[in-house]
Length: 296
Image (tube, rainbow, N blue to C red; front, top):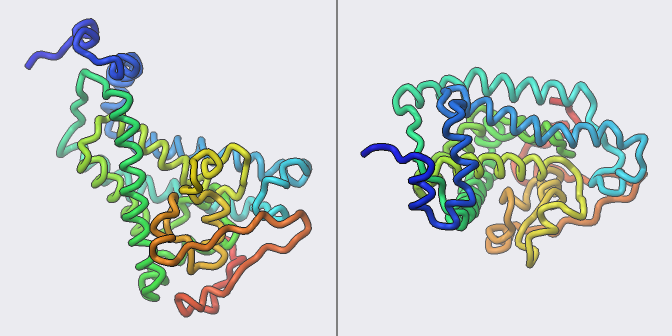
């Protein structure tokens, strides 16, 4: 079947497609998305782009009392000895593990991009479904890797080396955990037969929400304040998991923790000068010797 030119596409498109068609035409014809390096560059660039504003805020906080009121741990600021290893670890894993797998996948099935954009309602629906599926899959993975001591010590412990998370610690994780999250992403967009533009949107949204969860800030415009009915957890919700270890396992939404009895409401951020809370991880995984203040 011959490809459609721009005017033919617009003649056949619904209003929802017309809204996204110019964007998709630009993405599809730019040639960048056809590169086997594009997924890795997109992943790293998006991740660093979301982290950088929070890194700047952490740097400014000691001299900007107005910012401290929005920090979950006002007296904590990650040092360069924490930030740089986290960034280096992310780059290392993407270059050594993610890039070879991406190149292999591209060699076996090069990207074939459709001419038409997705309808906007379909894109929004599929992104939401991908997030809900990812939330379910990671909840099960997360609980399992906390309940089984060997799995925790071998694969998940590295992510908990900071009891007070920060943006660049989001992807400070084992290769197994990184590949597990990537596998969930790939399965979900495949099951839902997502349009490539939907896949790109989901990846960007997923990375952004994950960074926000670990950034350590609770702003009036944070996602959990925008999602109605208290369905979304947010940064304080996930921060409590990092300090107490036996609650709030779902990355984004609250329903699985609510249904299975692992939901713990997040307290208000402590006042400046207060002491960060924390708890012993040994009650869950039997690992009392872990130093939670240890830098990566």
